[in-house]
Image (cartoon, rainbow, N blue to C red; front, side):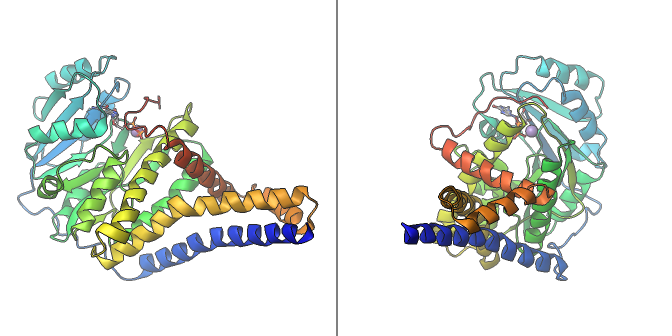
Amino acid sequence: MMSLLMLFVGLGITFIVAHFLMPGIYYIMAVRWLRSSNEVGHKVGLGIDPPFVSVIVPTYNEAGVIIQKLNNIYSQDYPKDRLEVLIVDSGSTDGTVELVHEWIKGHEDVNVRVIEEGIRMGKAHALNTALKYARGDIIVVTDADSLWLPDSLRNAIAWLMSNGVGAVSCSKIPRTNRDIETEYRSYYGLLRLAESRRFSSAIFHGELAAFKRELLEKIGGFPKDVGADDSHTAGFVSMMGYRAIIPEDVKCIEYVPSRGYWMWRVRRAQHLIQHFSRFLKYMLIDNRNSPREYRQIMLYEAYLHLINPWLFIIGLALLVVSALHGAVIPIALLLIGLALLSVRFFRTWVITQVILVVAAIRNLWNKELVWRKIEK
Ligand code: GDP
Ligand code: MN
């Protein structure tokens, strides 16, 4: 009995230490990538003949935000005659499409078109429909419930002008007063910038995801069987040897839901888990000859999203069980852990691990490929 208890304590501590070690190592590596003089690819600039850009906005019941979104695209620092906007709507019932038609009447100097899918078959399906109509050399996807800074599009396209860069996304500025969300974003945002310097960001953002059209066509459009269509597409671009980067000067604003926040986080985590599960397989089995730096990034990130959270939960469970059996060290450790919850970073970290575990379990029966709209 005594030795079993010791085993539980030993294993519990080992799991917890391992859980914090790996992200610690990755974080140090990321900071070094950021500090290294490595440029994020090479920003060529737009030149005198900017490429023709198709901006695709998928909408499902976005009446509350669509006008602001159109105005935001309209006010971008990018030549209007080199731009078309495709609103692809999947059977909205709140008048989204009517609002767009109204807006178009007052803005005839920019080409905005509406594509109606009629029934809802998910975001990726809608993006593929829009792709058939898009004429741009560059395809930019942007969620309706997000905003760009005036130079976001211009900077993103300028980066894409470089031969080695296949895709560009943005750093997120969350619109929220939840400190959990801002803390999570500042940590994640640093990793995105660092990975971009190294080779490619492991994660892309639907608020602004720009792709070279020819690469999208080679991939066969947006993946319909994985929720994180943006990250997944960027991953395919990277496996072909092109960089998919988040540069420091491309930023976007995202609205964060207040009600339904936790379900929203779980659904997004589910999508990321689907994305990384696939890439774990690609990196280990199917596509072992992907660029070396990219493989390293994806193996670390897959580990951090798929395996590492379980070490925490299992370690914690072992410590709780041994504490309940009167072991002193676990009691002390758990009390320290409880106290640490008052530290914002630690609290955010722990919550993120729980969300990832819940999401992994939920993926077993519901992949959330077509999801319930959550009001922002
Ligand atoms: P979140 O940002 O992860 O919360 O996802 P959202 O619910 O905001 O969806 C991202 C974007 O995809 C938004 O602009 C939605 O309106 C749009 N969207 C979601 N599902 C569908 C769909 O089935 N069809 C179309 N056309 N757009 C969709
Ligand atoms: Mn959204």
